[in-house]
Image 1 (cartoon, rainbow, N blue to C red):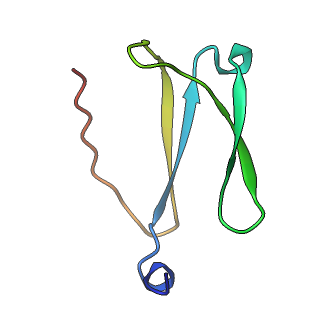
Image 2: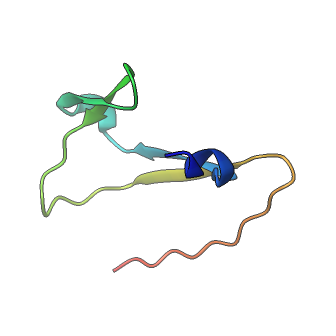
Length: 68
C-alpha cells in the first residue's frame, strides 16, 4: 500500500459508455468510505462509448488499442 504513494499513475482515465444513464446501477465501495455508482452490463453484451485519458502536467503517453 505504501508503494502507491511512490508509484502513482501520471494519468487518469475517464470511461463514458453510451446508454449508461439508462442502465441499472450498483454501488461499489472504493477505499475508505467512498462509493461509486456503476452501470450493470452482462456477459456477451456489446458496449460502445468514449475513453478520455487525462494526463498530469509534464507527462506524455503512448497508446495502443486492440479491438477484437
